[in-house]
Amino acid sequence: MDGTLDHVMLRVENLDESLEWYQEHLDYEEKDRHDGDGFTIVYLGPEEMHEEGAMLELTHNEGESDLEVGDAWGHIAVRVPEGELEDYYDQLMDEGVDDYRDPESCGGRYAFVKDPDGHEVEIVQRDPEEGALWSLDHTMIRVEDADDALGFWTRKFEYEHAGRWESDTFANYFMKPEDAAPEAMSVELTYNYDGRSYDMGDAWGHLCVRVDDLGDDWDQLMVREADEYRDPESNDDMYAFTKDQDGHEIELLERDPDADSLFPF
Image 1 (spheres, rainbow, N blue to C red):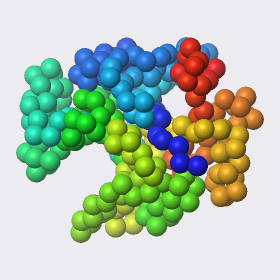
Image 2: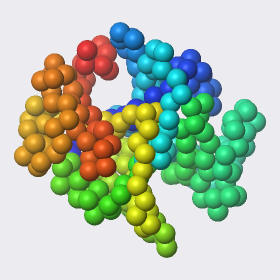
Image 3: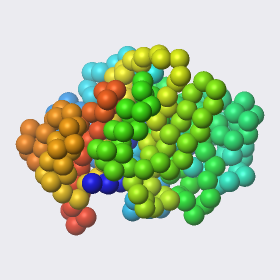
């Protein structure tokens, strides 16, 4: 099982405000929406999304406020063309986005802004052939044991290293399926050497892996001793959830390419 990363879910307090932010500043468009009993889910992404590109899922629960981002969740990263980081950062500043970490403070290699709920959005430079402008490049989560985290993604999901960066105090490991398209999103595992622990918070939702056969792939996860958090049967065989060693939720979802909706409801 080596399913590609389908989306990353973040919870937001004001859905209209969040939608406006991503649509105005990142040129995202609404791909699909589901209005449930007391909640709304919206899929977003660039207009020219690659078939293996990942979407952003914004979830709003009625009456929910004071969401805590926590520090186990790091950020999402979006792509701009190589050599144009400062231009696009200046564009965001001109549009009124908060100045969080500018390119100069990040050595000219990347930059960070925040969305209305305080979710960090990294801006990274990529070859234009590696994904549409503002497309999702990676999602960063923090882990308490690098060996356990790497083993989880390697053994459970058959992911492989797509890159790594190690410093004196921390290391970043990028994981994605073998032979994944350059446009596909990766998961960045950040390990700090000081042995700290993390708070998950409630504004961070989950990662989603798109699989070929939900039942078969779930059974394979169980053979590999993954956490049986929410099995397919408990979700009417539409999706399922496991958790990694740190408690990060990972959804499994099987999509019907001919369906009218992106949602399995």
